[in-house]
Image (cartoon, rainbow, N blue to C red; front, side, top):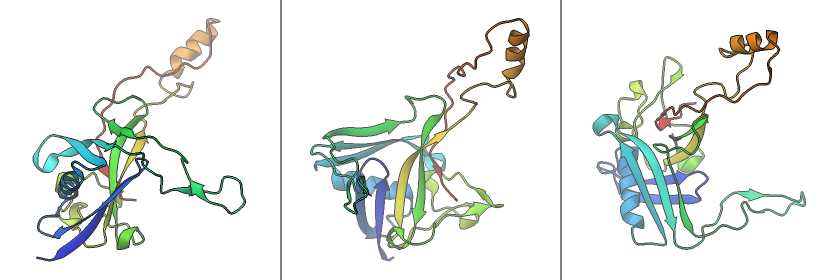
Length: 213
């Protein structure tokens, strides 16, 4: 057994928390998140999450932070070009910051939770594997699987970052070259409107995945 220190970040939600514990207790991304839930319970910023399925096929579908005091952004911007950097957004409010991809507000593209792991307090190399040169989709409850299968054994100074990514499951606008183009072409020949129409929004479920870029 060895003591490790791992940081959990949630991009765009102004949240970062570092956890220390035995490597036998912090084996997976989910283990770290459970520890963060316990550590922040009853504080001014309570972290919670929800998952789908169970066991090694379990995926994170919701992350939420309840800020009882206004959070502050760690991102700085030189908005006037004068070399003076200020937080962006400059002012935030207290409240619940969260997203549940089981009940998406956007259906195409759909937002999905995705995590990646970087070593050396976020300044090191991306610590995630590939299979045949392609990214692997690894459930957060099984993130320590065999590295040959895209897994990562957590080590001290690792940073786990969750972010929302947009995934298009179909065209956002049909064109003549897409599957809807044949109908459009026929409409043009019949003198009907040839303007592009937004694609009907069909819910497509994507699960949080590991980004193995």
